Length: 227
View 1 (cartoon, rainbow, N blue to C red):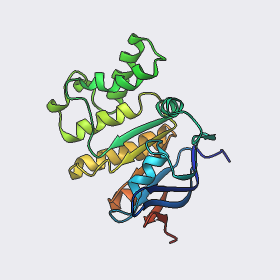
View 2: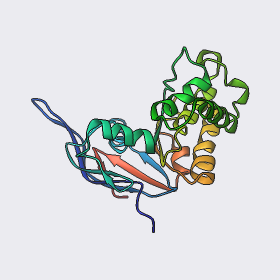
View 3: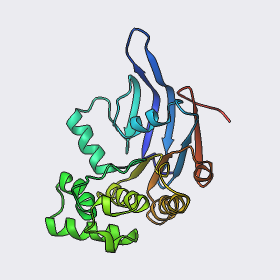
């Protein structure tokens, strides 16, 4: 069996203050290669907090987060940022596309930040990713010229730009209509986890989306709830 692509060991995240608030409490979790994992739970349970720890967007107060077997707590912020750029892709409820850039330019941003490809190869890969998501004719449009579902597909293309091991998605269908929700779910499940063999971790309130996952982790009060 291959080692996990992401693993947490007794991870806790506490916000300091006069009355400290614990967001995540002693979570052990392993995300397997090619797994489509759904994280569910009530509002305020810590779902997004856990996803941010998995994605190195937040640091744990205690415990370990390992990415591709590499323990991250002792890394410098620059090293963590580089690892995040190389191995992780992110999709959020709100697409966070830069409004002044075209779809292709938005998709190119992570590749330019990583600096591995030539400008010509970056442009070609951005076009290829958009075409694979049915957006070949929208590459030169700005976000305000596209529908919500199209913008979210651009965000997915951007998440795939650097060929990550894992795509982390926080309520990716929360702002979409039914048809766009089904389309985005199909992309995450069938194309990214299925055909491409990448791991996908999705935080969601959507029961239908969670039901399509290979595995579901339910969070209550910052802990994994035992079924």
